[in-house]
Image (tube, rainbow, N blue to C red; front, side, top):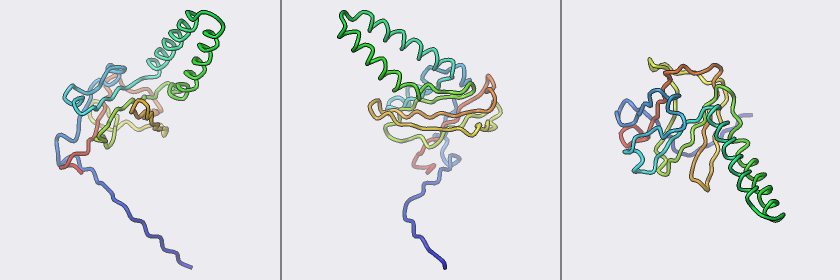
Length: 173
């Protein structure tokens, strides 16, 4: 017995070769971890990307936990302590998945209000794609308007790894 299924929708095909503005390359990706990766011209549209390594994410997690502990210790009375402890637990649960990274992983925190980004690709200095170790994940943080996109790599990235960002433009899509 044959069955047929109808699907309706729209497919956008990206061809960055049709528009030089559809691709931006961030050189020395690892050296720029923790800093904004795009120049100010991109930020005019609200677009922001920051890359984080495991070491940087662990450091930020420790700093935030220490700051929360100081705030909780500064609160007088039992009510303040209970509030601080409750907030600490909420903080921990909220960020535990966020900071759960393997040694060779990269986490990209992306703000893209106009949905301009089509794809991210990590390449070596010659432009050859560095294959991921199979693990990729994405999560939305609607309160902050950010997307967290992680890539797992089987081996450490070369020091001169680059990030290729592909954009949807009228000419490329």
